[in-house]
Image (cartoon, rainbow, N blue to C red; front, side, top):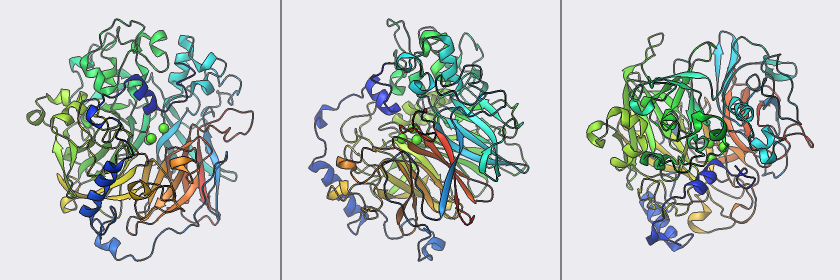
Length: 626
Ligand code: FEO
Ligand code: CA
Ligand code: CA
Ligand code: CA
């Protein structure tokens, strides 16, 4: 890693290491009339000149009966400063900051050293991301992801933050993974319950089990694990999910960047390319930890890119990688139930031109019943969208793909290509509406739309739910399963919103009609419904506040009414941060929100290291917030 790349986002870094193949026919076609033609074509298909929010297409009858918006707060303006802003009548405070002790044997963060190795798996980890809260008896437990590291902050005494020893690498590995922590509300607000028996750190070295179709396959066997059934650690834990039986699902996203090799003569297996695995690692792990040296352990990356199930009520439990849910750059896991009790998990693969998936269990969930194989025994599907606002989930079976069940689980992207899945504009979080049978997925942006194929050579034509070439702003697609059954293979869809900038552009880049000067944003990413059916949208986008992005300010969180389409800004994050991760206390009076990788010295102020943090937001009158 060099100073030049440490500031890059994961997808920018990936693009630098493994540029996607060009499609020369489309070379240079950016921001031109073709994209407008494509957009207008869609608008006609949607009717009424608006490309989104078709007339009641997805609204349930109960929702249609509602005539007034449920958004009850006074929206906040954009911000470009170093702190957080919430509406009048609300306040916020930090709950957990990177480096904060979970156990009393760990010291407070040393801002000179970024903390020592010995305590690095005893503190709240770096880069907070997806999270869920659980009630364990009367106790409130948050399970939360630590997606990646910011080496210049975590190893501030190293040149450029570059790891210089096995100890440096181990410290970084400890700061990632998952934290499980009890939290409680006292007179000064919410805080970590230090030394709670439920507190736990899961790192990139924690032993876990592999189950499902890929477990035990030769491609998962290594020298350290000749069974192909046990693995150390989880990595690049991005979004999350919660099962109906109260376990946590953590999703491995950009796992490729941790692998490399000092042996530049090593010929990488052809399957690596689709996943962006190459010889140059992002954190120099491969120099100090042979497990990450591809020439020595070529199968190790096949053991990452899965969804991991964790029991937050049992700190001695072994996390389980559920290979039946496929291997790709998992964003989150939106789990729900079909009417007959089958478990359905919706999932996005966050890479330009990759796919959306769902898993449907063969068995059914019954409260108190055995849930141990519900995420092992089932069918993986990939989404195909048609321009006529219909779509289908295509089963990834051996018959359809010519691949074995294990190969489908390990190389799910290649399986999706075999059945002609729709290439998407980077699917981030999926959210399932609790008051209507419908799902939403944030398609964050895609500069390659209509320009380049994905890494598997699949075309990325403008159209369907991806209607803008070189898409800078992102959109949110939603779908309703046939027969109000999440296990159904057919659905109808429309776009809930297309972000854009009507102050700067006309046409497609102005966005949809529910975008206005008062709610500008780009790159929707984190997304959750509250219990009332309001959609909360978090952004991870361009915060320069100029040019195409003028008037958008720092990353933010907005609330959207699914029925009226109204979207209002609820919160702005500190400069440079991404707002990601959202959950509510059991009494719904507190909203927990994640602030990832602030560039501003948040929240401790000037002269201190910037710390990714979870904050609590409450109403001053202590009424519920969702
Ligand atoms: Fe880790 Fe796609 O966000
Ligand atoms: Ca994300
Ligand atoms: Ca993102
Ligand atoms: Ca991020």
